Length: 260
Ligand code: GLP
Image 1 (cartoon, protein in one colour):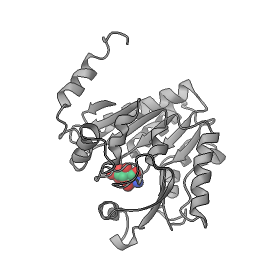
Image 2: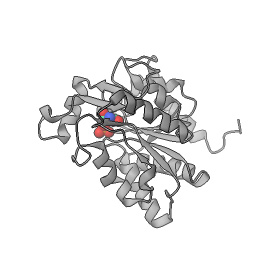
Image 3: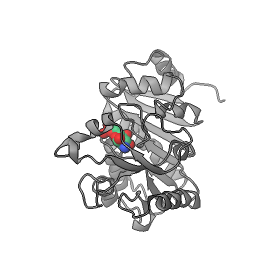
């Protein structure tokens, strides 16, 4: 696990977007795992800029989103389908048929979840997965006590997540209670993982994910078991890290470090 502390949101977004662009340039038919929430917006903005100004090409890539609210039609402005279309897909050239966002309106959730897992496998697995983090340490919608080997499934949201996400809805009662989400086990199979966090509100969750014990109480802590995860965070999100100086030291010494 690598912890990369940037001065602010724009810098962490640019650095994470750069890593994704490198994957795409190396492997034009890469499979991208995408996330919603406010945190990845800067990365999407930067990827759109790279597409427009530097011809970053998405024409051969495939995408899988982490999660979706249950019950919201794709046209609802708070559905993750809508979010992805507005903030990313309509600005780049990912072919429509290569886009996968879990269905929150399927009539058969278990069958849909199995199909989603199967589709990821058929496409060769996820090359790089973007993640945000909930204030309770969740990744995707894997709330505390989710099995660390869970797969795509229906999940009941925690009260704190409903409260956190209420800011996007007219009133808290409008936030869906259920979501469909990739599991922690599904996420851990991605080749590379990028976790993004900014702001004081994420400082506790980040400290527990990076330096706490691996525990289903903080599902992001499962990333400690993943061989290639980078946390791109700002100063505020880094503020509770005990080993912060060490992470900064590693980054500072990097360019001249001997080859492993
Ligand atoms: C939701 C999403 C997560 C996201 C989290 C944090 O719960 N399912 O994927 O990481 O919100 O959102 P934000 O980035 O807006 O803080």
